[in-house]
Image (cartoon, rainbow, N blue to C red; front, side, top):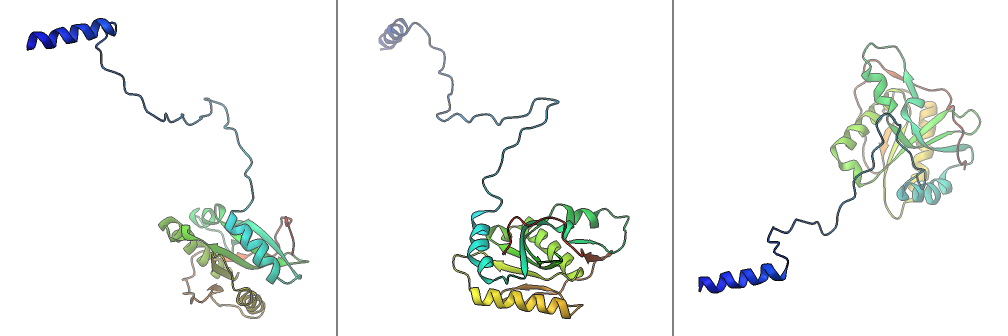
Length: 215
């Protein structure tokens, strides 16, 4: 029996060229390597398809353009550091850098003076992640300290236009007449006041960028 098996193996070696080495592992779907810039050379860039995500475009065109009065201009993707500044200098760089790399989804400004009047954040499912909650907490605290109203709206398919329009008008009216409030609201959700950090922030008098679109 053993002799018979050896004969079969010898026949197979002759048939397939005598190569009995193991077959190398080959991935069925090879993963292409991630392109990397050559040493000493800057990376290349690509233009994004849109300034906004699908949810942001839907909210921008189908909601804000329909509920925002003509006396205001709509800005998007505004850096938090362009909306608020430090009321006093601090040796701790954390207070300055925490506004450098964070953006507000939408900002309503006075049509003529471009004074920031209301910040709007569109909260989608990503805002449930831990790092997103940390960023949101910083935005809430900084805007409250600078007395810049911040309205958070949950991303959804159908928006209550009347409710959003009324909330926008109320927040702007209160911001122009009342100081010292928390100035942070979520639709149908109570906003918890945040402790004032040291140093404090102040609202920038005028936005220094041009709107890409105006209502």
